[in-house]
Image 1 (cartoon, rainbow, N blue to C red):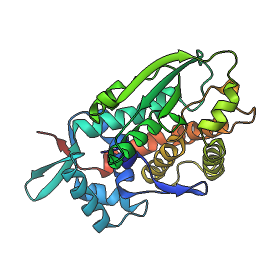
Image 2 (cartoon, rainbow, N blue to C red; image 1 turned 60 degrees about the horizontal axis):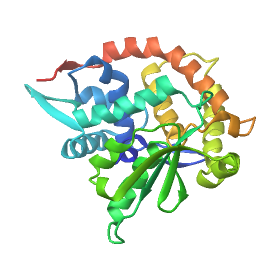
Image 3 (spheres, one colour; image 1 turned 90 degrees about the horizontal axis):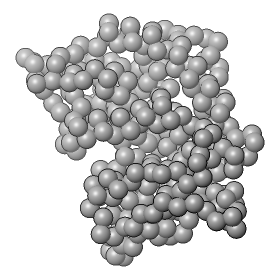
Amino acid sequence: MEDDDILDAQGSSEGPQQRPQSLMLTFFGNHVLAEGDLCVYSGSIIDVLGRVGVGEQAVRSTLTRMVNRGLLRRQREGRKMFFGLTPQASRVLEDGRTRIWHQGAVNDDWDGSWTLLGFSLPDSWKRQRHDLRSRLTWSGFGALYSGLWIAPGKVDVAAVVAELGLADHVKIFHAQADDATDIAQMIHGAWDLESIAARYVTFDKRWTALLDAGPGDDPIGTRLRLVSEWLWTIRTDPRLPARHLPPDWPARPAQETFRRVAEHTERPARLMARALLETTQLR
């Protein structure tokens, strides 16, 4: 299981094409995570995801697949089936919530420290290598060299390595760069800044138009799209130190747009969810 399987969407700098599983987890993050042990009726899930273009059959197959992968738990109440989060999915969504609502996309208070992670895996471990690289990307790392990855700040990545069963193949260091190191040049080499910037520009253009229109007739669907697209936008951004980025770095205006649309839709979406969603306590 990789976090990018859960939180990412397919797409390019032109914008995301959301995976049903990504939208599903965003739905649970929006309406279930903060409520504790809560299950949602499958019909309610079909209704909400249908508002963002996911058909009933796709919703049902995604629910089944996510139960099989240990991301959702199933609970029957009479003739109805309800679904709730597993601890594994809650962990990933808590991480996403921290990235979205607490850390932000702009790093103005970097302390000059870096986390370095070196690894050496057998050539036959292609899946393990892919899993590690995916999790490192989500954790803010970029490839300094093929087996040496780096992230700004002190990143606690030991739990990720242990979860993947790779602790014996990984070494982690916390350090500061020597004065001889051109940090801006290093950042350009380790991360695809053009691609990261393009995501922010695309997001900002798409959602600025909604600021004057209000939440519209479907705030629950609007908020689901908003959070899903913001997750897609920030997924490959390690929150690089702002002072080493171009002065016109687009993360700041995009984040302001996200927060303003989020503020406009928060209460209408919450009220709509109370009216639409049939829920029960998880046993």
